[in-house]
Image (cartoon, rainbow, N blue to C red; front, top):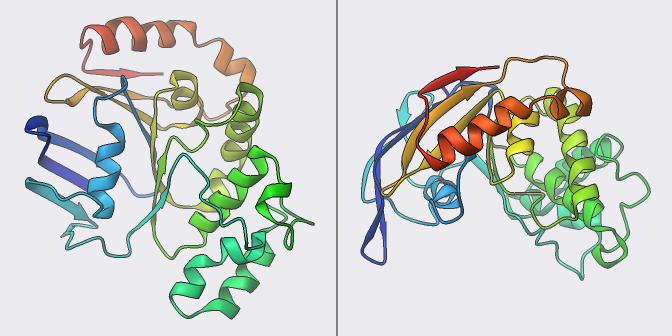
Length: 250
Protein backbone atom coordinates (compact mmCIF):
# COMPACT_ATOMS: atom_id res chain seq x y z
CA UNK A 1 0.00 0.00 0.00
CA UNK A 2 1.37 3.42 -0.96
CA UNK A 3 -0.36 5.50 1.73
CA UNK A 4 -2.01 4.27 4.92
CA UNK A 5 -3.69 6.48 7.51
CA UNK A 6 -4.77 4.71 10.70
CA UNK A 7 -6.75 6.01 13.68
CA UNK A 8 -5.91 9.64 12.92
CA UNK A 9 -7.10 12.12 15.54
CA UNK A 10 -7.21 15.91 15.29
CA UNK A 11 -9.25 18.62 16.99
CA UNK A 12 -10.04 22.15 15.86
CA UNK A 13 -10.85 24.74 18.52
CA UNK A 14 -11.49 21.96 21.07
CA UNK A 15 -13.90 20.21 18.70
CA UNK A 16 -12.80 16.69 17.62
CA UNK A 17 -12.67 16.81 13.82
CA UNK A 18 -11.34 13.24 13.56
CA UNK A 19 -11.03 10.69 16.34
CA UNK A 20 -10.13 7.49 14.48
CA UNK A 21 -9.90 8.30 10.78
CA UNK A 22 -8.47 5.54 8.60
CA UNK A 23 -7.98 5.28 4.83
CA UNK A 24 -5.52 3.84 2.33
CA UNK A 25 -4.37 4.55 -1.24
CA UNK A 26 -2.66 2.05 -3.53
CA UNK A 27 0.40 2.77 -5.67
CA UNK A 28 -0.63 4.68 -8.81
CA UNK A 29 -4.25 4.99 -7.69
CA UNK A 30 -6.38 8.11 -8.10
CA UNK A 31 -8.56 8.50 -5.01
CA UNK A 32 -11.01 11.32 -4.26
CA UNK A 33 -12.24 12.36 -0.84
CA UNK A 34 -15.76 13.69 -1.19
CA UNK A 35 -17.95 15.15 1.52
CA UNK A 36 -19.93 18.14 2.74
CA UNK A 37 -18.30 21.49 3.49
CA UNK A 38 -16.57 21.65 6.86
CA UNK A 39 -16.17 17.90 7.29
CA UNK A 40 -12.36 18.10 7.27
CA UNK A 41 -11.39 17.10 3.72
CA UNK A 42 -8.70 19.76 3.30
CA UNK A 43 -7.50 19.21 6.86
CA UNK A 44 -6.44 15.68 5.92
CA UNK A 45 -4.08 17.06 3.27
CA UNK A 46 -2.70 19.66 5.67
CA UNK A 47 -2.00 16.93 8.21
CA UNK A 48 -0.14 14.93 5.57
CA UNK A 49 2.00 17.88 4.50
CA UNK A 50 2.82 18.83 8.08
CA UNK A 51 1.04 22.20 7.99
CA UNK A 52 -1.06 20.83 10.86
CA UNK A 53 0.07 18.32 13.48
CA UNK A 54 -1.97 15.22 14.26
CA UNK A 55 -2.83 14.43 17.87
CA UNK A 56 -2.50 10.68 17.44
CA UNK A 57 -2.64 7.94 14.85
CA UNK A 58 -0.19 6.81 12.20
CA UNK A 59 0.64 7.78 8.62
CA UNK A 60 2.63 5.25 6.60
CA UNK A 61 4.13 5.76 3.14
CA UNK A 62 5.45 2.59 1.49
CA UNK A 63 4.97 0.85 4.82
CA UNK A 64 7.17 3.27 6.78
CA UNK A 65 5.95 5.69 9.43
CA UNK A 66 6.03 9.26 8.17
CA UNK A 67 8.38 11.48 10.15
CA UNK A 68 7.64 15.15 9.50
CA UNK A 69 6.53 16.42 6.11
CA UNK A 70 9.29 14.61 4.18
CA UNK A 71 9.47 14.65 0.40
CA UNK A 72 6.67 12.22 -0.37
CA UNK A 73 3.94 14.79 -1.02
CA UNK A 74 3.45 17.57 -3.56
CA UNK A 75 0.55 19.83 -2.59
CA UNK A 76 -1.61 21.89 -4.94
CA UNK A 77 -4.15 24.25 -3.32
CA UNK A 78 -7.30 25.72 -4.85
CA UNK A 79 -5.63 29.04 -5.68
CA UNK A 80 -2.73 28.92 -8.14
CA UNK A 81 -0.41 31.04 -5.91
CA UNK A 82 1.73 32.06 -8.88
CA UNK A 83 4.12 34.95 -8.23
CA UNK A 84 2.88 37.84 -10.42
CA UNK A 85 6.41 39.29 -10.81
CA UNK A 86 7.87 36.05 -12.18
CA UNK A 87 7.28 34.60 -15.64
CA UNK A 88 5.59 31.22 -15.98
CA UNK A 89 8.84 29.30 -16.48
CA UNK A 90 10.33 30.73 -13.28
CA UNK A 91 7.08 30.07 -11.42
CA UNK A 92 6.90 26.40 -12.33
CA UNK A 93 10.59 25.90 -11.48
CA UNK A 94 10.16 27.02 -7.89
CA UNK A 95 10.99 23.56 -6.50
CA UNK A 96 14.23 23.46 -8.49
CA UNK A 97 15.24 26.90 -7.26
CA UNK A 98 14.63 25.94 -3.62
CA UNK A 99 16.51 22.65 -3.92
CA UNK A 100 19.43 23.91 -6.01
CA UNK A 101 18.66 22.09 -9.26
CA UNK A 102 17.43 25.02 -11.35
CA UNK A 103 19.06 23.99 -14.65
CA UNK A 104 17.52 20.53 -14.51
CA UNK A 105 14.16 21.96 -13.45
CA UNK A 106 14.11 24.44 -16.35
CA UNK A 107 14.91 21.70 -18.88
CA UNK A 108 12.24 19.38 -17.47
CA UNK A 109 9.72 22.21 -17.37
CA UNK A 110 10.37 23.23 -20.98
CA UNK A 111 10.05 19.60 -22.06
CA UNK A 112 6.62 19.45 -20.39
CA UNK A 113 5.19 22.80 -21.51
CA UNK A 114 3.57 21.28 -24.66
CA UNK A 115 1.89 18.43 -22.76
CA UNK A 116 0.50 20.89 -20.23
CA UNK A 117 -0.87 23.14 -22.99
CA UNK A 118 1.53 25.96 -22.13
CA UNK A 119 3.64 26.24 -25.27
CA UNK A 120 4.34 29.87 -26.07
CA UNK A 121 3.67 31.01 -22.50
CA UNK A 122 7.07 30.22 -21.03
CA UNK A 123 8.05 33.88 -20.64
CA UNK A 124 4.58 35.35 -20.13
CA UNK A 125 3.50 36.62 -16.73
CA UNK A 126 0.55 35.22 -14.76
CA UNK A 127 -1.55 38.32 -15.29
CA UNK A 128 -1.72 37.63 -19.03
CA UNK A 129 -3.04 34.05 -18.64
CA UNK A 130 -6.61 32.83 -18.24
CA UNK A 131 -7.70 31.08 -15.05
CA UNK A 132 -7.43 27.67 -16.68
CA UNK A 133 -3.94 28.37 -18.01
CA UNK A 134 -2.81 29.56 -14.59
CA UNK A 135 -4.07 26.33 -13.04
CA UNK A 136 -2.18 24.31 -15.65
CA UNK A 137 0.97 26.20 -14.72
CA UNK A 138 0.31 25.53 -11.04
CA UNK A 139 -0.26 21.87 -11.84
CA UNK A 140 3.03 21.68 -13.75
CA UNK A 141 4.82 23.29 -10.81
CA UNK A 142 3.32 20.58 -8.55
CA UNK A 143 4.18 17.77 -10.97
CA UNK A 144 7.82 18.92 -11.17
CA UNK A 145 8.27 18.32 -7.44
CA UNK A 146 10.20 15.14 -6.74
CA UNK A 147 7.30 13.60 -4.83
CA UNK A 148 5.45 10.39 -5.55
CA UNK A 149 2.07 11.40 -4.11
CA UNK A 150 0.14 14.42 -5.43
CA UNK A 151 -2.27 16.09 -3.00
CA UNK A 152 -4.85 18.15 -4.89
CA UNK A 153 -7.02 20.42 -2.75
CA UNK A 154 -10.01 21.37 -4.92
CA UNK A 155 -7.59 22.55 -7.65
CA UNK A 156 -10.36 23.62 -10.04
CA UNK A 157 -12.83 24.92 -7.47
CA UNK A 158 -12.15 28.60 -8.19
CA UNK A 159 -12.78 28.26 -11.94
CA UNK A 160 -16.02 28.88 -13.80
CA UNK A 161 -18.09 25.83 -14.75
CA UNK A 162 -16.94 25.64 -18.38
CA UNK A 163 -13.25 26.09 -17.59
CA UNK A 164 -13.51 23.61 -14.70
CA UNK A 165 -14.94 21.00 -17.07
CA UNK A 166 -12.13 21.63 -19.56
CA UNK A 167 -9.54 21.20 -16.81
CA UNK A 168 -11.13 17.96 -15.68
CA UNK A 169 -11.02 16.66 -19.26
CA UNK A 170 -7.37 17.67 -19.46
CA UNK A 171 -6.47 16.01 -16.16
CA UNK A 172 -8.18 12.80 -17.30
CA UNK A 173 -5.90 12.71 -20.36
CA UNK A 174 -2.83 13.52 -18.21
CA UNK A 175 -3.26 10.74 -15.65
CA UNK A 176 -1.15 8.20 -17.49
CA UNK A 177 1.60 10.71 -18.23
CA UNK A 178 1.79 11.84 -14.61
CA UNK A 179 2.22 8.26 -13.37
CA UNK A 180 1.71 9.31 -9.75
CA UNK A 181 -0.46 8.35 -6.83
CA UNK A 182 -3.11 11.07 -6.44
CA UNK A 183 -5.31 12.06 -3.51
CA UNK A 184 -7.91 14.63 -4.57
CA UNK A 185 -10.15 16.60 -2.21
CA UNK A 186 -13.35 17.84 -3.81
CA UNK A 187 -16.99 18.69 -3.09
CA UNK A 188 -17.91 18.11 -6.76
CA UNK A 189 -19.59 14.71 -7.24
CA UNK A 190 -19.14 14.74 -11.02
CA UNK A 191 -15.44 15.53 -10.68
CA UNK A 192 -14.98 12.63 -8.27
CA UNK A 193 -16.89 10.19 -10.49
CA UNK A 194 -15.12 11.33 -13.66
CA UNK A 195 -11.53 11.19 -12.39
CA UNK A 196 -11.32 8.60 -9.63
CA UNK A 197 -10.51 4.94 -9.28
CA UNK A 198 -12.14 5.12 -5.86
CA UNK A 199 -14.27 7.67 -4.04
CA UNK A 200 -14.09 7.91 -0.26
CA UNK A 201 -17.05 9.60 1.42
CA UNK A 202 -16.07 11.60 4.49
CA UNK A 203 -18.94 12.37 6.83
CA UNK A 204 -20.05 12.56 10.44
CA UNK A 205 -18.83 14.31 13.57
CA UNK A 206 -16.14 13.34 14.32
CA UNK A 207 -15.66 12.64 10.62
CA UNK A 208 -14.89 9.19 9.27
CA UNK A 209 -14.96 7.38 5.96
CA UNK A 210 -18.59 6.25 5.77
CA UNK A 211 -18.48 4.70 2.32
CA UNK A 212 -16.06 3.60 -0.40
CA UNK A 213 -17.08 3.48 -4.06
CA UNK A 214 -14.98 1.88 -6.80
CA UNK A 215 -15.28 3.32 -10.31
CA UNK A 216 -13.97 0.68 -12.70
CA UNK A 217 -14.95 2.21 -16.06
CA UNK A 218 -11.85 2.52 -18.28
CA UNK A 219 -13.28 4.44 -21.24
CA UNK A 220 -14.55 7.59 -19.59
CA UNK A 221 -16.12 10.46 -21.46
CA UNK A 222 -18.56 13.26 -20.79
CA UNK A 223 -21.31 11.12 -22.33
CA UNK A 224 -20.48 8.31 -19.89
CA UNK A 225 -20.43 10.78 -17.00
CA UNK A 226 -23.85 12.18 -17.89
CA UNK A 227 -25.26 8.64 -17.71
CA UNK A 228 -24.22 8.23 -14.07
CA UNK A 229 -27.39 9.69 -12.62
CA UNK A 230 -28.04 6.66 -10.43
CA UNK A 231 -24.55 6.81 -8.92
CA UNK A 232 -24.88 10.56 -8.36
CA UNK A 233 -28.18 10.01 -6.57
CA UNK A 234 -26.66 7.25 -4.44
CA UNK A 235 -23.78 9.48 -3.38
CA UNK A 236 -26.04 12.39 -2.52
CA UNK A 237 -28.98 10.75 -0.79
CA UNK A 238 -27.80 7.43 0.56
CA UNK A 239 -24.25 8.43 1.53
CA UNK A 240 -23.78 12.14 2.18
CA UNK A 241 -27.19 12.55 3.83
CA UNK A 242 -27.63 9.25 5.67
CA UNK A 243 -24.28 7.46 5.91
CA UNK A 244 -25.36 4.94 3.33
CA UNK A 245 -23.81 1.71 2.17
CA UNK A 246 -20.33 0.51 2.92
CA UNK A 247 -19.11 -0.37 -0.58
CA UNK A 248 -20.28 -0.02 -4.16
CA UNK A 249 -18.72 -0.67 -7.56
CA UNK A 250 -19.41 1.04 -10.90
